[in-house]
Image (tube, rainbow, N blue to C red; front, side):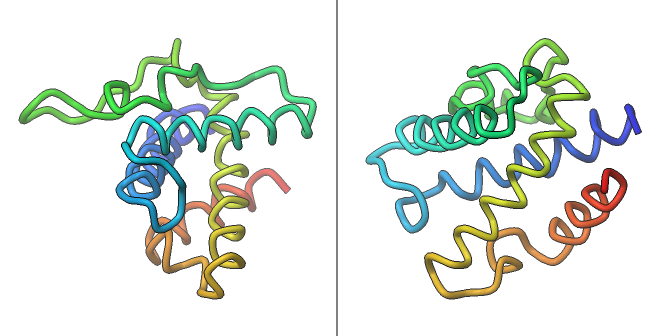
Length: 128
């Protein structure tokens, strides 16, 4: 599971953060960094409510932290998002997707895409 959390989980998480912070349809703010700051607050509050000490670093919720250099794949350091934090963050991403679906009265799949939804649901099922 360690490899899954550090590979598949990180890809799904970063993809969702980028999609959700593209514009103001889901998250308020006049820039990607402002929208990512809002998402960071949601993530932090969720972690506090779950009593989680293992969390990703704030750097992940910045445009600079999520954007790879031109022509390169995004690489997230384990110092920013380790396997245990990724495991918990998968549940936060799933809960945010459901919350966005409630707010917009649309299916959660609209905000994750069917592939990402399948990945998230599969990863969540491993931990139940």
